[in-house]
Amino acid sequence: MLVGKYFDEGHNFISPAILADGTAQTDFELKPHIENKFAVLFFYTLDFSYICPTELYALGNRFRKFKELNTEVIAISGDSHLSHAEWRNKPVELGGVGDLPFTMVSDISRKIARTYDVLVNDSMSLRATFIIDSKGYFRHQSVNDLPIGRNIDGILREVEALQTYQKTGKLLPAGWQAGQDSLTPTADDLSDYMVRHAANL
Image 1 (cartoon, rainbow, N blue to C red):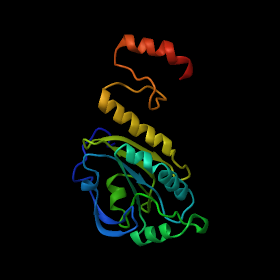
Image 2 (spheres, rainbow, N blue to C red):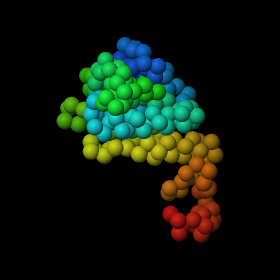
Image 3 (cartoon, rainbow, N blue to C red):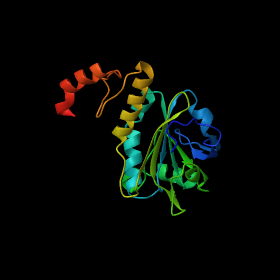
Image 4 (tube, helix red, strand yellow):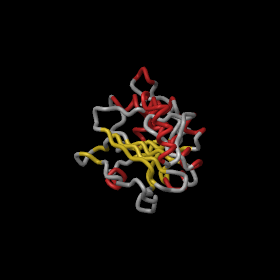
């Protein structure tokens, strides 16, 4: 469990990657790329697979919103960076994913997946998501089994909720969405909130 822990050198990595502009970098380092920002680490299983393209395309469709939230998105799988490049170079109708607007890291040694404890059958990573806040703390982690694609709107909601808490110190209740009521940690505020919202929870 990484939630609550500080991102340190043990969580950092240097690995080949395809950057958002499509160029290859053989020594991409995570730490300087995410300093003073929120970050979403998005582990997926394989290039040229079935559910992964739907996840990555959904992530790309919402990328502008992540950027507005000062949040870097890093996708990671056990494929080579050359495979990432080839997958990006193919249009969707030919089994590719096109020009995805975020960095795709190669974890061909599976070292990163082992570090984050999301490797399955010693071969591929589960569908794991980690959110690191701008102060360098892990604030969210979740893992889906292989058949189940993730809800990218849910990841955006987690980032917005964490940033709202960081700015205001207020708590975000079940189902909270940006712009909705938050609450202070007092019995009176909770009672007032429940009277107004319990029926819709």
